[in-house]
Length: 111
Length: 313
Image 1 (cartoon, chains in turn cyan, yellow):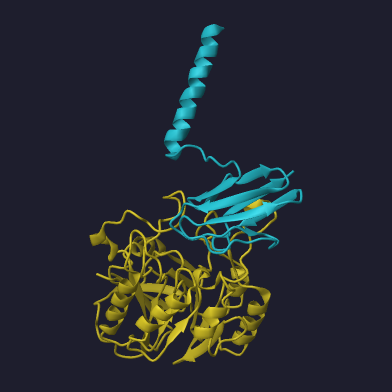
Image 2: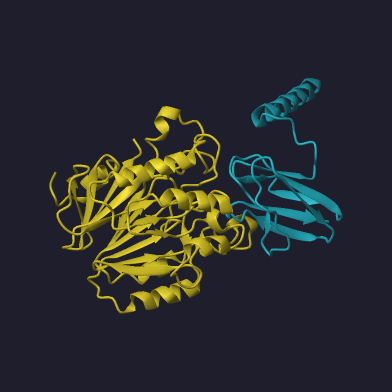
């Protein structure tokens, strides 16, 4: 039993180290941040409490936007390194996409 | 090479694109012949397509996009047969900024031709729904900027499929993430081709491909089937697109689809990279072999249009 738990712990640690190694950076410090990289929003679905400000940051060499599908909010053009913040007060599901590359989609769930 | 190739030989020949093989179309049947680049045309006319100049882009693999656009212009001006006109199939600019449009217009003023026709790419319209674009390049167009004209018996249609882009399927709300033509433009197009004889060669140009190249990357156009169905009765239809920054070709019945290289940077072949976007690690000495322009010739008899791609080097 003990051995198995140890093995499990070792596996979890290894996976955690691998995760950091693969992404090439430590996990984002701000839990309310959406990173735009490789033409995708990460995380694709972010759940936050009402009143939270969510920030998008573009790590791609291509410009992107974060635009609500119902146009309730939209960033300006985010060039490399640009950030956009939006406060979410009302609970609900906010679907958004990149107006320039509309196959890129994401979701903010406000509770 | 024989003039009547079976399909298998044709597919083999597709790999030659860019090395100097002419694709000529006659009544929906493709034939090919070797091309002597720069050979003087005896009759008919030719025009040049350039695409995706992305003025304002300043990252790997190309920090000099204005210069490579200038090199494309120099290449056009060196053609033995000066083009009747030039078509730019969009993404003139990278961020739809006024100064980017100005730089592009300035460089393209230097083309030795009668006129440059434009259709916008999503990079030219996404900040203001195309207002700045139309102020500069929208003269003589209809609706939101679509246009048609005739030249020596060939009918040209410039479509816009980069406005009102809808979200992709990932939201679960429907939507493809594809280019959009819109019913208003389709109604205009239906009316536009109504009076044409079916023997009229038709050339359609638009930014995003009118055939689905990659659903995952949004490389296709909603309602393109509707647009193409309006052209079914024509014996010769040539569709010229940009957006994908590489040469891809397809033949479907009477329609030849062709995408052009960019003058700024190459993009990956779908399925060979996790995402679209510039191929960053191109060695400087290789870049110009991945950029280029497309020369299209019409010999004036038998509905033949010959599409010839060439690179900047």
